[in-house]
Length: 247
Length: 388
Image (cartoon, rainbow over all chains, first blue to last red; front, side, top):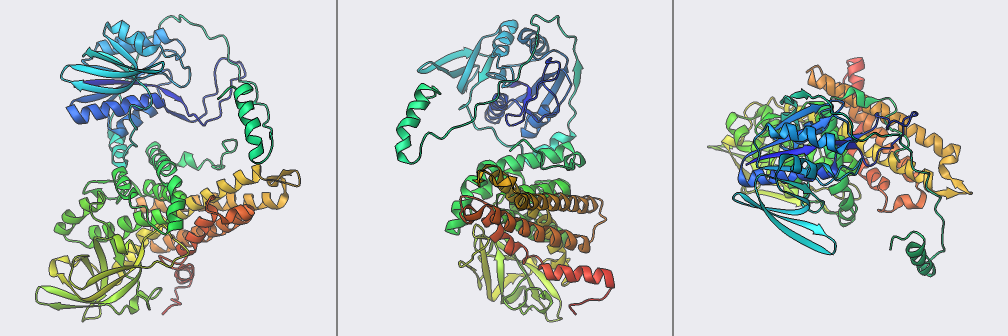
C-alpha cells in the first residue's frame, strides 16, 4: 500500500502572532508546528502501514523550504519525505495544483490530508487535489477501514455520521477523533536525522487570489466578575447564553 | 504566559534541531501524561506504573546508549529529557535515571556480551525493571564501608546484607547489587528478584518522592549464579562511575523542577491581586523572580557545558559534582521561594511548587549529598581528601 500524506507548517497555537508593519503577512520569528490535523493524517497513514504493510511518503509545500515538519513526520515513522520549495500559502488553488502535479508523478493508493490548516482555515486543498487527480475523495473523516482495494470512511455531518465507501486510489481528509497521534520516539528522531529530505524547486503559478492586507484582531475586552458564590450561577448562565452566545 | 521568554539568553540556539525535537517531544508527553495525574499519585504515595511502558515506547530508557534497541542519542539530548521529565516530577525522572544510568549503564560498561544481549534490549523496552543496590542502612556517603558480603560457593555466589533507600526496589525484576568479596574488593551482580534469599520491601512513610518507589533489599544467603556476576568491574570505582552517570542526569533534571516552579510563580505573581495590584508589581516579589531566572539560566548553561564535554569524552566526576551540587541546591532554593510567593496556595497539591520542594529535599541528599560534592570539589582544588 502506497500512502502519500500532505503536510503543512503552521504557527504554533500558543505562539503570539504579530502582523508585519506593512500588513503583508505575519512576522516569521515565531514557533511553528506540524498542522495538528495533518498530524492525524500522518498517524492514520502509519497505522494503515503497520496493519497492511507498504510505504508512507510525506510531502510538504513550503515557500521558505523549511523542512522541520517533514523531520517530525520522519521521526514519527514516515518512510520518506519530499519538500517542494515554492508556491504561496494563501492561494488554495495554486497549492492544490502544485501538490497534484507532484502526486501525479508518484504511485499511490491513498492520499491523506488534514481537513484544514489551522492558519488560513481554507478547507479547500484536499478536495481540489482530488479533483485535479480525478479520483474520489471523502472529507472530514473520523474513521477509516480498508478492505482489499476499497476503503470505508466515516465522516461527520450535521447531527450524525455518513459512511462512504470508495475504491483506491482516493483522497481522504482527516478530522479530530480519527486517532491519537503518536509522539515521535527518540529512536525515530535519531533515525530521521540521518535521512535526506530531497528539495524540489517548483515554479510558482500566477496568483488567482491576492492578499491585500492583514489586521490583528481587536484586543479582548477585560473580564468582569458577575457575582460570588452559587448565587452568581444563574446570572453567569444567562450572560453566557445571551451575551457571549456560547451556550 | 507566552508574553515573556524564560530563555533570555537564547540557550536554544546552542541546541541542534534534533536535540530540540527530543526536548519538545518529552515536554509534550509530560504535559499530557504526567502533569494531570502526578498530584494524585503523590498524595496516595504511589508510583504511576502505567507510565513505564509509555516512557519505554518513547525510547527514553538508556536513550544515550547505542545499539541494543536504544536510541543512541547524545548526552545533551539525554539531559534535556531528564529536564523535561523532572518538570513533571522528580520521582518520574528518578525512575528513568535509575533504569538508564544505574542499571543499563553498569551492564553496558562492566557486563559480558551475553549479559548485555540478555538484559539491555529488555530493559530498554521496560519488559524488565531494574534497581541499584549500593547504599546500606549504615553506609550512605561512605559506601566503601559496606557490610554486604559475597562468598563463592561452587558455581554460585552467596550474598548477605541489606541495601536501603533503593529507588524502584519494590517494582524491580533485577537488582544491580554491590558486595564485598573475601579479598575485600567490591563486586557487582545482576540479582534476579526470584533468587532464593532475595526480598524487597517498600519504604512507605516518606514525605518526599512520594510518587516514586523507594525500598530496601534484604539478601539472606541469596544465591546468585556465577554468570550473573559483572565480569569487568574495578572494585568501588565501578559503582561510583554509575553514580556519575546518574548525577549528570540529575543536574539537568533539577533545572526542570526549577523551571516548573519558576513558571508557576510568575503566573501566580501576575494574577494574584493584593492591595489592589498583582503581587508581581511589588519589588520584593520581582526580586525573587529575578533570582529564580538568574539561577535557572546559569544552571542550564552549566548542565549544557558538562553535557557537551561528556559528548566529547572530556568530562570528569568533579565537573559532574559541580553541576549536580549547584543545580540541585539552586532548584531547591527556587522551589522554596516559589512556595513562599504562592502563599497558602503554595502548600496545596493543586500547585506544583511544594511537591517539587519536598522532592528536591531527597534529590539534594541522594546520589552524593550536597556536602559530599562540596568535598569532592574541595579535593579537586587542594588535592587533599577531606573524607579519608
